Image 1 (cartoon, rainbow, N blue to C red):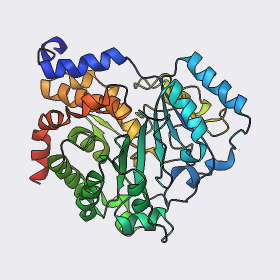
Image 2: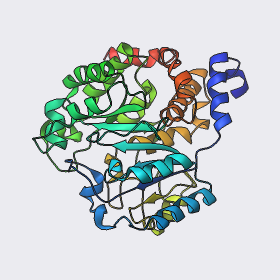
Image 3: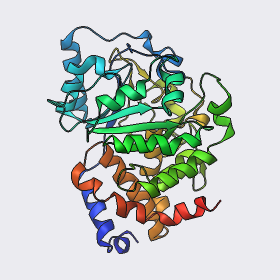
Image 4: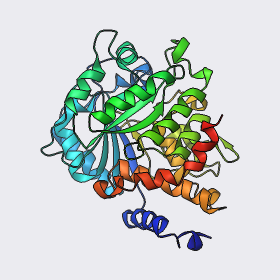
Length: 362
């Protein structure tokens, strides 16, 4: 079946580029326990993960890099804390691995020395909502980040939408695109129990439809697929329901994950989530105590799709759903050529138009 699907030149091109890069052997690193803001719903501070301290000795950090290179790591998601407070160490990681640096946007990341580094700029709503959730009701972080990353092709807005604020999505996306940046979408979990428009228990039907519309409006700028939008927002992948038992991004040698590692479901065999001390690992991307059933973290959902190729081989449409989603992940982290890859976005989105038609009619 796969050979017949790859008779399509476009699909063959995407598949060949992914195969040329090879498998991603990834880790997640909270590079610092320090941040310059306190977001309402940040997994890091919500679970007290700043209790481990960043080592001050640069030799320890260099030893960590050498350790991970020897292990075969080739991709790191850099988070924290706030990575822009540790730019020297971010640069070292960028020089040795594919990286995605997740920043709150308050401080610019220089271009010199970070020319081809993927930067995910966090955003949780329009200026009012984002200020409420991330700026303590006082700092318009969205406005500052727009200025810091204006016209910066490295920057992708990591727009985490809330269940009750679908009406904000188009205006926010307009501003990000007008700023010369690309946009990726995620979903907000109400870890602080704020309720109202932030309550994830209300479901994501409205935001899901709006994200489909943004793909229609900006097919050359939106770095997610209609299929990923469905999987993440519904927590469904064929006969499976999202939860700990299917999460692919668990620390494989963490003692708390023995049952998950042995349950027969696919997982990332290399993955570790490191705390700021560079030694301690946690259960998964977002901690030791999270309710996985409510987790909408994008990267493990992408892994869920990525590691289930066989489920997607029934038809060429299903294979296209898998392939385009995996390709966009490789594109986001710049494992494939970014400038060439973004020119393929309109065709990628055109091939999933049938999915959007289903949901935009509802």
